[in-house]
Structure formats: C-alpha cells, structure tokens
Amino acid sequence: MWSTVVIHLPFGRTSRVTRVAAVAKTMAEHTEFLEHVKHHLEQAQASQKRAYDKSHQPVSYVVGDWVLLRLRQRPMASLAIATKGKL
Image (cartoon, rainbow, N blue to C red; front, side):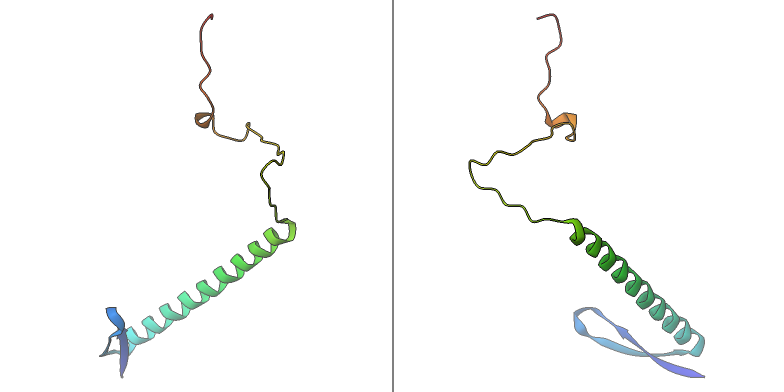
C-alpha cells in the first residue's frame, strides 16, 4: 500500500513524495505526538501565567520616591570590593 506525503521545504515550497505506507504512518504518528506535546506545553505555560498573575501587582515609581534596595540578594560581583588589610 502506497501513500503520498507532503514535505514542506524552505521558502514556503512543498514537495509530494510517494513512500511506503509504514513510513507515512510513522510520520503521521510523529506529527500527532508533536501536536500533543505542544498542547501540553501551552497548558503548562497558561497554568504558570495564571499563578504569576494571581499574586503580581503592577508597580510604578516617580522620580523622588523612596524605595527599599535589598543588596543581599545581588551577586557579590555587583557590589564594591571591600578593602582588605589593616588600614
């Protein structure tokens, strides 16, 4: 049993190739699997976005506002190097 498979080439061109039915079936299963994985990734992303949006509060600052700057969470490379020695 033979079937025709459409192959998508660069720049929007397509090519039709006749192959063995087993190859066509494998390609169809692969395409279905990729669609399934993409669907689950989209669901996971939407779930993470809902969790983030649930606790997120928009923040805006104006020049002159006082803000709390927590330096302990910054990497040590971004802080000034302390002098070592007696003096």
